[in-house]
Image (cartoon, rainbow, N blue to C red; front, side, top):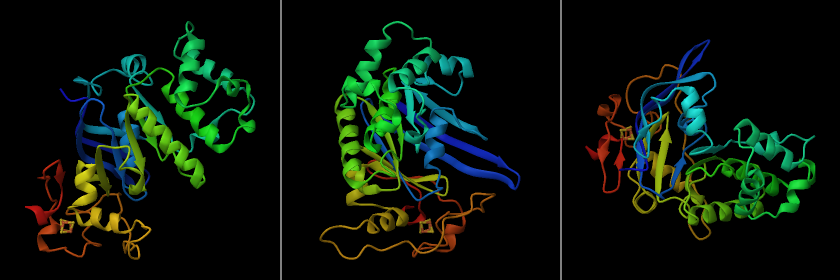
Length: 310
Ligand code: SF4
């Protein structure tokens, strides 16, 4: 049995201009203890994927597909069942920019207690809070402080500790290092590595492919709402198949490599997208056939959605 299986997951947002196809037929799976990195440009569906897994898509809806966690279908559960048994207890999320949402008028401890109250955990609350604080390498003195007394790095640790409070098995971290300076980014990356070592599965969402290799065994590359390549980190870094994955890797600056290149053109409009490969307008290898949607072609460790591998 897989730890996490996502099959044909499709999520749409309804807007005044029409439906946004934010997530389209996404597939991947993880074994127990494995982590996944989700990479791609802005507005490619990365965050919607995380929000779909935790069933918190404001203004949007999962229209088809399956999500199985440890063999149980979480899309078949009622909202109250999911909230009671899964959200924060088995799957938690560190939302993008959440460190700015700490309440300035309450101490950190009061904010932890409030979360526990909302989940009706009145007993053992001190132990749960201390476990969470220690798991992000902070000591208890931080609990007496107010958000304005904390650095950006500490606030981000607190937000991660809040996600860990009910000891979930899968933590989705959406751009957890964005808006932090480089040294603090490294600290948060080290923290994620430690959590992984402690046995947690992490879904790390980022536009920065460079930070994924040490945290994730698996990588999913998103483009235009689709996961266009999925496989082991090793395979994706050493032998990327999809022209977009190749371009994304070539855009990472390296110390001794040549000049990074950038991907010309713009991402596709997800409002009523046309048929065919979503990368067609930017792909140097595009051919007539690419006007039809490419299916998933099997690779050694996953799949690629590109007609070049038919
Ligand atoms: Fe390029 Fe065609 Fe492959 Fe799309 S399917 S990435 S357009 S070669």
